[in-house]
Length: 373
Image (cartoon, rainbow, N blue to C red; front, side, top):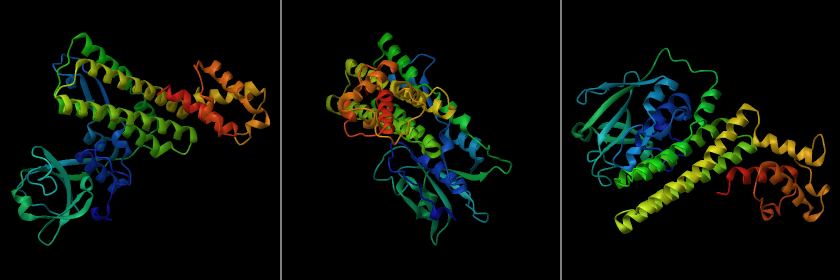
């Protein structure tokens, strides 16, 4: 297989993966049929220093190229921009080209760079794989390539690289990243210092990246542990958290376009909203860690509480709850779960169409983890 046949599955939202990330993902997928480990160390944190603008308080840690070398043994070597590209050993090159010189970006963007891959010669130029623009065998004419302002890197796989047999501890460490506490630090610093100045494009980019980080966390978990129905429920909630943060991002953009400036109280409200969603995200990620560690998970607690309530040693998830309860008597079980888990109220209407103990447990699990979101 060559890069002509390499498409990234399920990559539609450009606000999750930027063009550079997608090229590195393509290389990883080409070599290993996966790319999830590229995101094992992504995070953001509150700055340790002074800042003049809000976006400077949010420090993003991605470094995808370092992760490519660490987890896949993929390294890149600078090549002179005028040097001839060779393909005797099926070489792959990653190109960073000025957007004004690249055919797919000349009419879209005015400044910046775009990354793409070259993996062979065509009749009058080079073969390009650029999953960001959904092309795998685009012909880039040699003349356009030669004239373009660019940087060139040759990709190779480190000959001594050996993957680890298991990455479970890496996943648990990744899930331990606490986005909520960091956004709280940022929120309080902004208010304490009355630091409400911002560059709109940079601020929006940072909030977009927070959305992106959660989506990448979902990818890491989904790739490895999605079979469990409780894990699937956790992933659904994380997806809802990410989508809610995306709504905040769009709301801020809309306000900026409408009024040319975002009022201070609006910034406070939106960062508080992000913090609320990230509190849910923190709780769900902690539950995933407990599921992976097989100890003290909410799933396990609900199961034990159900047995305690029924005074039984076991109960099948497929057993109808109405074999033991008549009509609204099932609310006694909900009241019991509320008391045991310090919940204000479980909405009975959400349970009306459910019939089995398994369904009741899963719905209660969902309601507790969502935390009123």
